Image: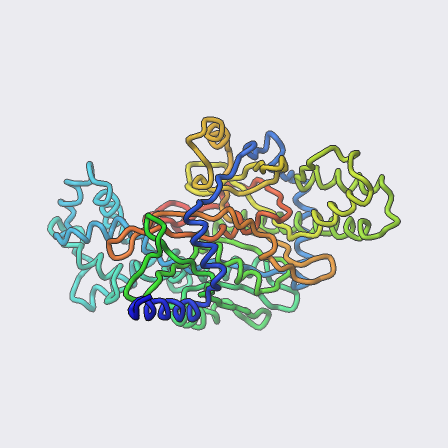
Length: 527
């Protein structure tokens, strides 16, 4: 080995040590790139018709809500919101339009809107600029730069400087901020109040995590570059939502550097830069570490962009409590069943009854008829199946939103389980798999409530219940060079693969995500 090669090797080894990613993980990642990840094999879609998605009746709902309120009052409940991502994608069309470096007038936009989607999107935004909750802030920053937005309806008014003030650092900088810091909603009173997405999550949490001790617990994951800005914002607004009867316990955490994954070239060779190996954040699946560190009890999980104004929050509050009540109800039965299973005197009849309960309520699938198991074998498998984290997942009817859906998944050994599956995990060139995928009726809106402690009150190590073969490999680029990137199993996908899972239908009124900035013009987000 020549001196230059030796120096490069030493530099790479030093970089690996400094990265926090273990050498074994890096070797496993290179192996995964070379050999790929297996497709998930769908067995059936989960629907209300086949019973894989539960429909909760009005009569059942009231009792579940009461059970949830007991757990909430006891201080068992908190909320976990992944909020790390920047809002850049929300402004993709606006940034593309600005990238032409041409004046952006109403005439130009209208002339091109018929054939060019970016211009059509930008036209919708500028024609409705006054309807966005952030309009007053944009008006103020525009005035400081000598721009009078009162003239925006004039045919030759150039919107390009205004859109730069909306998206870039010298103005509101919205294209570079996390979604949580964007002003989502405006209220007519008091004092024309506006709220960011972070604030709307606080308001929500006050309605379904406030314990009898007056404490509301929230946890947001943020990126390192935005940590101080988010902390400052939450510090500035918290007095709006605290009073003598309640206090906010808000924690922030960052995705761990040790969860990053190494990138490779399209030929599966290490992707090298001047700094050495190229490490990338490994997607929201990396946040399993953050969730695990909380050592919580009952945890609501919800995306940062799925919030609505106060006047339509009622369904959200109600169904959050319904899901929580169902979780508490099932957890009580599971804990009682575990006590029986661990008691050597429990009869075979009781063991079979517990297995039947799991099959009916938790969608357990057994590799052979229950009668073929010995008592010890049945006791062993029941202990494993019962002693797992629990998740209740709200599912809405699919109305064309991108994302994962609920399916029964079949494994090589013939076993099956309920999983949330992304289209990228499925071989859609297989006609049978495509048919099952197309028959899906519901969509995962990331509306989860999780029980993360065992029957002894001890926190589960959630990393033990992840399916490491359910990650993603995707093609990206860096400085014009193509690369392959690896994402860890998604937080609510493969990261929760070996949890006890129940799917429940929730109304579409609980799901109004903001994926692009123009989504805030939908009636649900207007006052």
